[in-house]
Amino acid sequence: MVSKQKIRRKLAQADFTDDVMFELVMSQLEICRKFLKAVLPKLDFTKIKVIDQSHLKTDYLSKAGRLDIHCTDAYGNQFDIELQMTNEHNVAQRAKYYHALMTNHMLTAGEDYQNLKETYVIFLCPFNPLVTEQQ
Image (tube, rainbow, N blue to C red; front, side, top):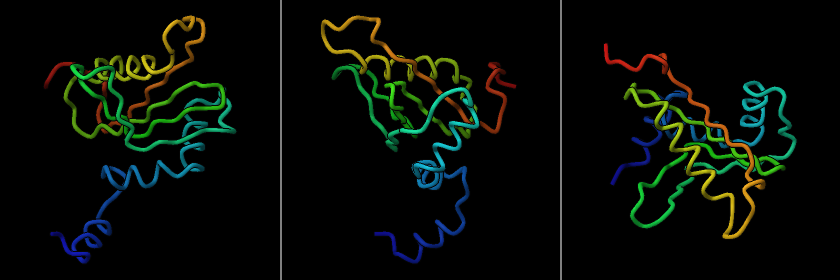
């Protein structure tokens, strides 16, 4: 069992790039709202719901996805904010998968495809995600 002192020391040394600290900061409604407004200034973030560490899965055989910060606005649009510190050269594929996971949970059986809302996946990376080759 980890002592409270070790936990406090780890938190004191943590910065925004630590998963726990990122979640603690970005799950704060006003901080998340300001961030989204800075990234997507044309959208309305007056009312948003923030869910940290959202787990989405389509069925029992599919790969689950864990969204770092998952938000929904008043119109049903969904936003995923991801902290990606290591370059695994798969940001485009991950973004596609996260978009699909969020979209998959928007409609119920028989519902019209016109009811699909927008999905946005935002990656925060200390590297250029457009560089796909390992160097």
